[in-house]
Image (cartoon, rainbow, N blue to C red; front, top):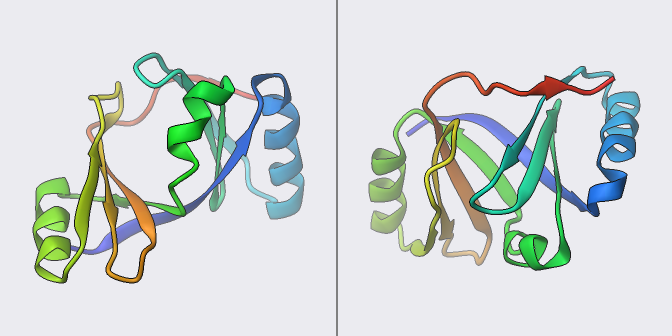
Length: 128
């Protein structure tokens, strides 16, 4: 189960999403990916280099704040099987998203990681 990408989540209020993306573009030198709104969770997300900017109402952000890292993997089932064999526990199965599926697992060291299996390239609008 190789990890394809490691992203650090950064949480912000909806009104500050664009400003936060611009800040991390400036800090990382990376171009922002598309901005996606996930209706099932009420969150908006944009990847900027190694940072995943997430915004939404506080009620939507609260459950996401438990996540310390986001890893993309080719096989969510394979990653889950390997992690459970090493003592991880399933925290939450997430609803299907337009760009893939995900679940949260707590590693034996206590870190909660969201594992994301992408089904296709995300569609969205890039930020300036």
